[in-house]
Image 1: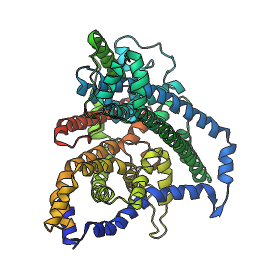
Image 2: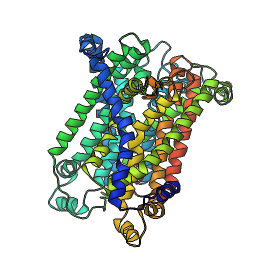
Image 3: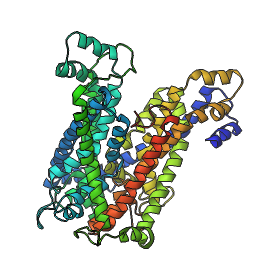
Length: 575
């Protein structure tokens, strides 16, 4: 970051802030266009043109296929039911953590966020290892179903259950942020007017927090719609096809019309996601609840004798959705073969030894994921520091457009972005090269996908900085390069570091995008776990998954320990 400041200073950019911003903006706009807009345009062209001629052939073929509408109905059902489950779990946790006097809130929030940070394919793998007749954990305690019993998770409801658990944290985060803004005085006034218990919650608190509830519900639905890991690992064995898995199957077949058809399917799932976002904005536009009073004094409703019971229930839910599935995952990684009962006589760490020291594919996947995650974090921080500065300090129509464009690749399902990147980079006309089948295409897709994750913490940091600091430095003769180097960048450094770590944590475990972009020799950890389980090597897949979970928990713990040194709001689960 200091190097950025020195470069700006050495480049002779000691000029007025507006002139500097005007020159910097086009340089920042170009990469945003390349990674956010061009792939979507190329996606539309592939689906609506045949050999360079406008045609509706692909659209007609997809629309006439019964498989398309069956997969669409399945996607809507599982995403909708999963969202309801997320709403129930995340909403209950948010209301109880934000509004009541339960103890150990920081620990509850930290543990509740772990399922969201664990990759969805690991969530699916852990639950599959927990249930069914081959469960090493259930066999060890004598509670496994009879051999030959069906796997209950290979169904629509099983997919929806795990989607709900995976995305409950999204509802929790958005709703809790809204609940913490409730002025204590307004709620106390309602209580003095006679509102108590359910009436207070239904007539006062719920309407005031409905924007956060609606936003969380919409985000959970869109995310569930494009979640490939859970839908693939549960849906494909159960022959329950959704839009993401249908796209995966068609792309794997790679027939003469595969790209055109998957482009139309990608646009279809993108259209459903956009409709969900539009409904979300329409619902929010009809709600205009004004908050009066002092914001920042959260409620602390006394639970009395019920507090201990509620605390036990909350921790029991966390144990059920987090601890027990992970125990099943660990148990499977220690048995010599999947389906063997775990005991003191046969447990083995051979799978971990194979993963770390023997199998070239697993070692290569660790290397690839580490390289991609670190590279994406470094590049995105370098881009986001000046981009956030221009957006915050120079708000114009163009900067608002840029701010909107960077959200597109993250808001749309990952399979849509993956297909768009394949089409755009399978052959670059000017350079006459192809990125398809290389790590580079995954890297570019990661830059597009996670740009918003790195940008938002830095923007929040700049918004919290008093402009008077920069104005005082400018009045003393400091040019924009020196102001960035000596004042703004050091103050924004903690937020930039947090954004980089969030990007690393997310990219290190990613599957939805890389599942369609990987090739032999370019596997990522997410792809490796999916392929190992798909090929029947569940023990090895579980060993890799346990190691990945260990990395996730270690990084989250590092976040938590460093939270006191970071700007408020940078760490999403920080209480």
